[in-house]
Length: 476
Image 1 (cartoon, rainbow, N blue to C red):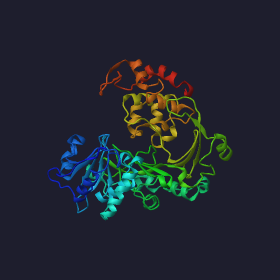
Image 2 (spheres, rainbow, N blue to C red):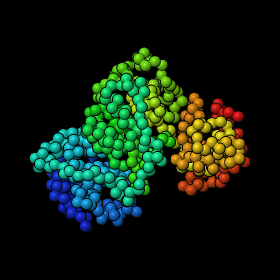
Image 3 (cartoon, rainbow, N blue to C red):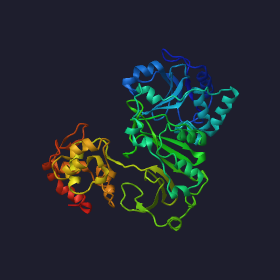
């Protein structure tokens, strides 16, 4: 049987291969391929400049790669400075950058336990190899040194920036006041729900994730990695940390120019939690059983976004009196349970002239939820009266883009808008506007509408076709 390839005899210029890496590499080189996960080789080599041309010099000076993953991602040893041990970092194939472990010793311990959060190394088929690695580490008396948490993404980005003050950041002073439904949850589910919406550096979040789940709290998220999942399978919990919650009460909190302090955005609860949720058994077999316990469903949705049939029943319950955190039970052949901070979906994250045209049209047709814009009512009124353009409103009131929750909560409206903006189910804003205005080469090589300005003449030209798309929800 083939073995892993190991080439650790020489480090890139300016670096040294740590003795522990050389020793474990010699051992790994004797193991059958696949028994420790899906990678081909341990090789000490410079980090490719192409991974991040802007940071290439710093990366090559302070880090080197030692493991290739099948998707093109790399693991690297990074020198954080200040006498800290070399950390292990992931350099993702799509530009992701995150700390895997604060030291090589810690990484090897995680690897032996299947808890690196890297699927190729934590694969179930590698269980026997990981047991052997754990035995090797124990025989060699390898223990992780105590060290501060290293934030590779922030280190890579550079100097920190001061976060917004509490007065400028409503979420920083958000008070979680539980509802009666929250009080009915079991202690484990209630403890998990109580950290939703909190920042990753909140002491309660740190205590729960590290103390209860035995996991690490992600130090940051970034423009390339806007969310990080932390799974504690033994506890029946998987948490999503993200800075990108599309809710005006949860603004992104910058840590550096391109990294952020994330929030606890959502979480899945599973049967291994050991508690029923609101009395519903985890092995419930039919929707009628859930209905008997919880009453009629809150609503129904399609199984997939590109389907029209509303076949999946769900039950929603607010867990805090401000309505920021919600519990949802869904039944689609089996039960799934989530808790999440309420947030919208991005219709257009990076608005352009076509977004301005749609907003102008939507303002005159009563499609917008006007209550969402308390600080811009005068401008919204001016747009609705055709005295200001939609692009003016987009610039001032939609700094994080247009969301589905900016539209009225009318049955089917947000769902249709989602499909229309995302080229699904035969609907696409770009195709409709090309049909109306003609087409030309866009900035990224794709055809785009011949539209330079969202004038009211342009809105009027597009209105007949848009009226057909949104006929069921128009308020004239």
